[in-house]
Image 1: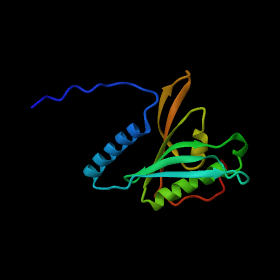
Image 2: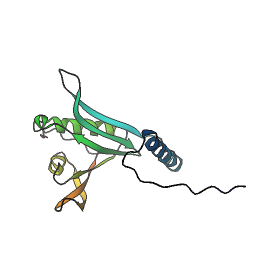
Image 3: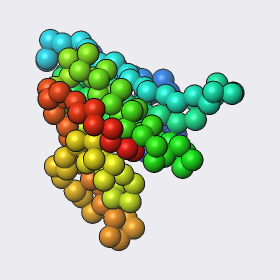
Length: 155
């Protein structure tokens, strides 16, 4: 029996999509074996330009094992401040609930939108200093088992 050769390890800032999929699928398979639940699904709430039908912003994330993860959230500046952001977040939370999620998690940067999330019922549970100095990553969560408030918060 020939011993397995030592694999190479390398760092890249441009992984191939197939390589990322292999890692994601492998972790998914491990989680399903351990948890006995196979419920990981992507989630996106997108905003389209009414004239061009091109996506101009929105939210991406995923649901898995009872958690809604918000990964990315972006709106162009001209679409901010009129409640559209809160509506996008509400739709993501509602879809998480439909998928059986009890909790939602995300992180934002201190200069991005922690106040927006707090206005929408999210709570900070951690903060880690990052660059530039004075900046931090803010980790937030929301209990999705509580009925959502439809009081017209603006985002």
